[in-house]
Length: 106
Ligand code: FES
Image (cartoon, rainbow, N blue to C red; front, side, top):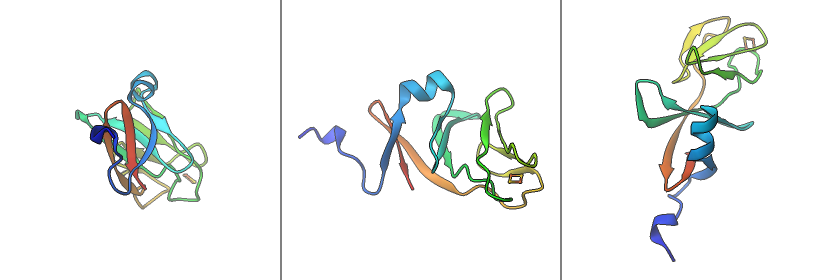
């Protein structure tokens, strides 16, 4: 058994670091992950479900924000509200890189 490949307790593999860096983000129904714009060594994971009425937000890499397609709410990389109609931040999760994989604790 290679200890380095063991998943940390409670974490799930979401994708590869290669895909994260190729696309600029990783996203599933449950979680969206980007590199911290101010410290790219850190990952930031949030629940992509908009806190207004539940649409899936999309990462806009150029603007480094999550945009909701339904009513125009925007969130920063940490999930904080930039503008409404949403008033609550996106739910944040812990994320980390282990080897070549991106893991999140959902
Ligand atoms: Fe996202 Fe309304 S559901 S702004």
